[in-house]
Structures are given as structure tokens and as C-alpha cells.
Image 1 (cartoon, rainbow, N blue to C red):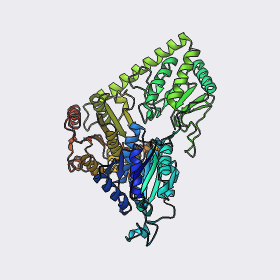
Image 2 (image 1 turned 30 degrees about the vertical axis):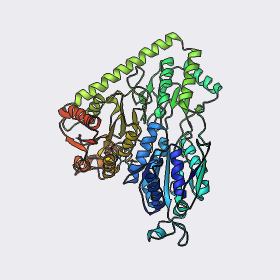
Image 3 (image 1 turned 90 degrees about the horizontal axis):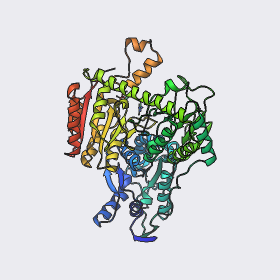
Image 4 (image 1 turned 135 degrees about the horizontal axis):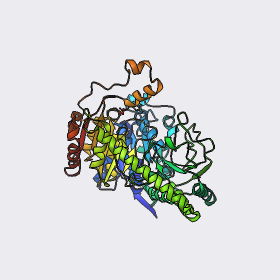
Length: 569
Ligand SMILES: Cc1ncc(C[n+]2csc(CCOP(=O)(O)OP(=O)(O)O)c2C)c(N)n1
């Protein structure tokens, strides 16, 4: 239906459109470029008109993280607006994360005024000269699906709808729009637009049925098929079809470096995150949305192993180099591809004796792993300083199916029993540190009735601009529990040095550039923003502290933080 509303400026028309398109949140980190927008916001708020809720977020890393967190729960893009080139620079790490994690976001930025005089919005501050760049979009172009500058108020509907549709089209990702101050200031009398939008993302796709058939036969007749999956759980609807496929074949599922809940951890065919030992004997291997299913430099499948890859883009075309074989690539929505594969496998049938033998083998392997993981936690539960496996076990024991876990680095998922689709999110494959604290806040906005637990290393915590994140949690009433796995080091860096030079100088004499001592009292940073926050050093009190912290966020609706002092590597 064509709709006509009265407005005064392009900025106001833009807000009308965002609200009409279902954008609920506008994460803003403002500067002088925001003036016409803030004016339009105030006018519409005073007149009681519908608006995306404007949230002040005092660092871009937090703002982009929040939009990412919101998108990963809902699949829907929200708006982030940052200040010209400098805000874009601060946002870029988050944009790279969102690009590689396929989180849809409409990232916008002001532009320094183009004109030096005469037009409304023209330059009137000293920064307006130095904050101009030759090509602002170039800063982010490699990592967004589309970038553009709004050039005329009259093009608003097409530009906004195109931005949102491209961001939502699979594989989803961020888009970037610049908004010059003169254009936002442009006087408009009215805005005419279609409601609902006529420019939507395309429907989900599934591979050619003949190719699905071929893959099903390869799997059904295969000698020793396995599944390696990383992120198909981005669509919670893809979990059940993967279960159906694994059950129809009686084969194990490895969620290698999983970024999502792809397969229930308590399923008898779940075999953990490390397929390395199986690579030599597996054939065929079904790789599902996994960008790096093994490391060829360390261990790879046999040279003749058939590799079937399922995903929105099995070639990962935005990665410059990725040489994993794609003997058969099934592009499209994994939810549909996996369901079609499961159906086709059932139609062809797997020899019942083979199915039975396989199922028994992998169910026994699942039980062996579960026992080994439990034994690992039991062995360290009394250790002081606290072992990260014990922290992870305490978290796993304290949470339920109504909890969403956001993990930036140190949660050991062998110690959890996550099983609800959409209940687990780990950092983007790009791993730009600083994502977790913001993503957890965005997840809370998207799922206010769920409990959000955010696990961060002490390094990830610092990268996450904690003062900005804690400020935001209090200001916008977002009670999330943060757990710091505090080992006073960048262990990831240490591990990489040890594997690079196992008997080298650094291992023998100490490692520069990887220590985080002296550690601040992180709990005090959180308390400064009114959080309930405690330091935990005794492993025996940890289960109780975890339950208490969860009560604080659930019942008292107050943000909380546990600073857990762990073994130093
Ligand atoms: C923006 C950014 N800078 C640097 C790195 C490199 N890096 C990867 S892991 C890591 C350390 C993380 O420390 P912490 O969160 O304490 O976890 P730990 O390694 O101790 O388990 C660093 C510095 C990165 N991934 N992203």
C-alpha cells in the first residue's frame, strides 16, 4: 500500500522509513554529523511518532557488537550509526567480525559536511575539514556486502530498502551507508513509500535435486562417513535436519570450532569438536558450513577421500584462499539441503547391519567422550588457582535451556551440555577481539526473557571496552552475567609461540608480549556501573557463586560479573 506522511526533513523521512521497516534499535555513537538526525528524533518523540529506539552506546566496538548480538538471535538487521571516518575506523573490527559471521547490520556513518558555506548543514566546526576522506566507503568496502552514500532525500526509500534487503539476503552480512549532513538536512514536505516494502530479500534456495541425490548415495554407500560442522546453527532451523541426517546414516557429528549450536551436545552421535583422529579413515566427509574443517599442515583426510560441502557458499568466495576440496558442493540454505539429504538417504536406505554397527560404534564413542570430559573436570575441581575446565563445568551445570551463552574465548564446551538450537554463540571466524560484551547486550535486547551468560578471557574483556559495555548495561537496563576467565595472560599467543618453537628461547626463558599482569580488580570496573560483581578464587565456592550471580540477573534484573581467578599459563 502506498503511504504518504508529512515530514520536515530527509532526516525525519529516514526515521519514518526505518520504523516502518521494523528496525527496532538505533545504536548511536554520535558526533556533529548527527545534528539533523537528533533534531528529527526529538521532534518525532515529542509528537509521539513511531521510532526505532535510540540507544546511546559510548564505544563503537560495543555498538556494532550489540547489533551483531541482536542479529545473531533474530536474523534481522538493526541500525548502527557512527561518527564519520573516525567512528567508522573504531567500528571496523566489529564490521569484519559481522562479515565473517554473516550477521546482518545496517552500519551507517555521517559524512563531514560537503559544503563550506550556503547550504543548510554546511561546515561550521574546525573538524569538518580534516574529517573528510577521498572515499569513506573504501575503509569498509572489502567487508560489507554493499556500500553507498545517500545523495538525495528523494531516493531514501530505494536506498534504505536496498540496504536492508542486501544485508538480509543469504549469506547475510553488514552493509554500509553514509549520510551527508546536507542531505539529512534537506527540506522535504512529505514522504511517499510502500508499506510493506516492495524490495525484500530473495527466498531461501536449495541445491539441484540431482546433486542432492548424488550426495545422498555417496553418504548412504560410504565406507565411513562423518560430519564436520561449524556454523549451520546460525539458522536454528538447521539443527533438526542435521540430527535427522546423522540418525539416518548412523554417523558421528563433530562441531569443530563451533560458532553456534549446530547439533545437541547430549545427542548419542555427538562426538565433540575434534575430528583429527578420524580424518585418515573417514570417507566421505560431509563439511557443513565449516570454513576451515581441518588444518592441512597438521593432519588432513586421505588424498582420495570424497569431500561434500554444504553451505550458503561452499567455496567461501569472500576468502582469498581456501583450498579444501569441494568434490560436490551443495549451495543453499543448510536447513533445506540437510532436510533434502536426510529424505534422500532414507529413500535409498543404509544397509541395516551397517547402520546398527555404526550406531553402536559412535554411541560408544559419545559415552567414552562424555566420561572423559567429566573425569577432566573432576580431576581439577579442587585445584587452586581455578582451572578453566572447572569454571566451564560450573557454568554448564548452572544454566538451562532458557540460557543463551556468548563465548569469546575461554568457555570449554566439553564441559557444557548445550542442546537448545540458538543457545550458543562464539566469536566470529575473524576473531576480532572485543565482540563478546557487546554481543551479549544485543542478545539480551533480542531475547529479554532469556538469561544471557557472556564468557570472556581477561584479554577479551579488555578488548570489549568494558566501561562502555557496563555503562550501556546499566543505562539501558540489560541484566547480563559476564564471567571473566582471568588467567592474567594472552594464552592464545603463548600457545602459538609454544607450537612454533616448542624448545625455543621463549618457552625456556619467558614470553614477552603475552602477560596481562598486574591484573586490575575487574570486579571494581563493573561495580562502578552499579553491577553486582565478585572476585572468585576458591574453586569450592564457584558453583554457589555462579548460582547467586544467575539469581542476580534473573530475579533482581541487575547486571552481574564474576572475576574468576584462573591458573596462569
Ligand atoms: C583485535 C584483536 N587483536 C589481537 C588479537 C590476537 N589475539 C587472539 S587471542 C588473544 C588473547 C586473548 O586473551 P584472553 O581473552 O585472555 O584469552 P586467553 O588467550 O588467555 O585464553 C589475542 C591477543 C585478536 N584476535 N583480535
